[in-house]
Length: 165
Image (cartoon, rainbow, N blue to C red; front, side):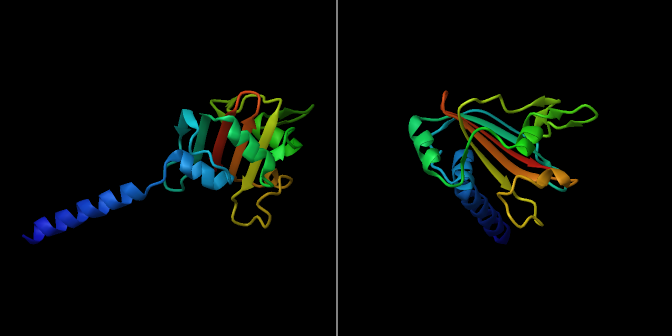
């Protein structure tokens, strides 16, 4: 009888934790400060795992035009073009004697497509960083814990990435 009660309690706890788990778009909405819950996920890749949780999560979602209007009003989002450091991290930059990035890539190919019109979101989740919105200093570190998002207003497409090294 005691075993049955213990098994029952374990099942109840597992069900309760599963019911409380956020969907991907709920989590993205919370992180990005917008209501993206109605966006439809087109692709979702996540390589996080292992002891330190390093990896890359990349989500592409189709949204409606109300998301673009919400982003345009948000102070968390900035109008494109990207800063130099974000271009280096997302697409890579070639100099005469050096190449920087792209860090956010799958098999050496940048995850993000080139977007002409839209907005971007940047969050530096590195513990020692004092200003999580500062895009100027993160490339000087040996490791990254970053969140990037680009919203393409021409296609109403959201590109989201969490990159942890």
